[in-house]
Amino acid sequence: MNSTMIMATISLILPNLMMLINMILSKKTMMDREKNSPFECGFDPKSSSRMPFSLKFFLIAMIFLIFDIEIALLLPTMPTMMMSNMNQWMMSVNIFIIILIIGLYHEWNQGALNWSK
Image (cartoon, rainbow, N blue to C red; front, side, top):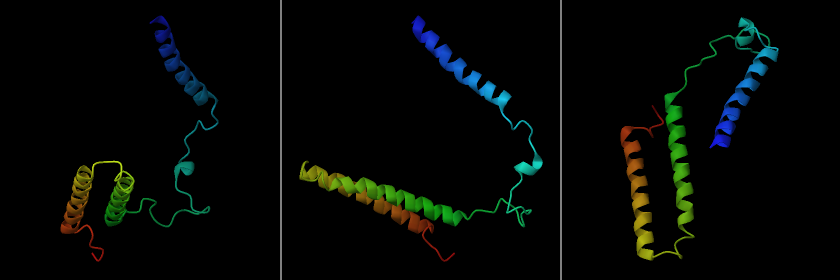
């Protein structure tokens, strides 16, 4: 019990001590407005550095990521087919694919797949 408390204390004090020494010895002690501003090849930026992000692009990227993960989950089902009971395997794969189809239908119904807007 005593050694656990000593190790916990050391694990809390040592990182904090290292961060304090780093703050004291660091060269960047002064926050400069020019250094914090966006930099474009030595010139002032022509427009705002915070451009509005297309929500449609984000939605398409999320849908791609979800279906990419779903494919990664479907790939191991083929090698396990011979090692398991065929009825249980078919039932679990069919339930998984039905859930995917329902999700795709919901995205299509909500208009998430309309690229022309």
